[in-house]
Image (cartoon, rainbow, N blue to C red; front, side, top):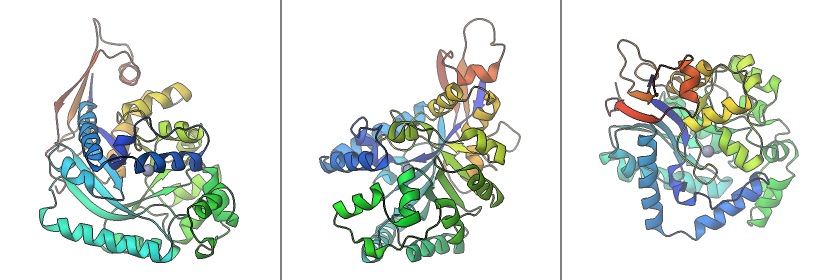
Length: 358
Ligand SMILES: [Zn+2]
């Protein structure tokens, strides 16, 4: 059984050394505290080795393109030598001075690599979230990407602590900011839910890839669909951190065509995006396997603005080809077979041309 190459539309390769090191199940803030604690224990060479291994894992899974988000550009040189396409989103966070400093640092890191930037990757600045970034900075990042005609990305409506912090400035995230010595006075809560706040800031749009929406409600998903914003879901990460899945049935009913991503190895056990579809297949048995395969391929390619080349086995495209081997007679339901754990091997028959510009 053949499929187009798989699209992993949301990764954080720089966190690859944290596999299994940030315990979940207690919500976002306890997870992020564990993640930061574990990250502080790591040496730089452990990071590079784990990122290198992560790139290998992506390739073996049949991944042909990634949406890679990071605070640093460490993964760039390791992705550069791999036969994979990547949209690199250089993530900025922070209130006032801290955020402005991170933006200056991001610009300097980008400038240092500009001459040697690899052909298989694009580069865009991206706002981390709307609750960890000053609204003026978020708008500046959005304006920069929009001005350049580029796709950017934003984590949105991931967990209830985000909603609470945006509504009234309180809850577990406020306590986390204070525990880190942050000044809550630098953030004025907009008293809006995450999706409506994104709309107010101009972040609900076709050029902003929205990540998660695990905590979004039906009428909020309608706003996302109305704005025709691309969406990527990371169900295994949501399960690990918050023991909650994204509202997939509501999303499909709203007309969204979500891509899938593994998120980082700090919240997910592998970089195999097919496992995201399998997880959804188990928990949402009424969703057709054809839809789940589209989420891995054509929806993913569209979300990363690579649909003219990837995501479909069709004339004029070069999407890469993945073969799923079966025993004996061909499976009666090939789409369900691909999503199931029945294939005895997954072979990568071809990969797309490794340049991001067509
Ligand atoms: Zn993420």
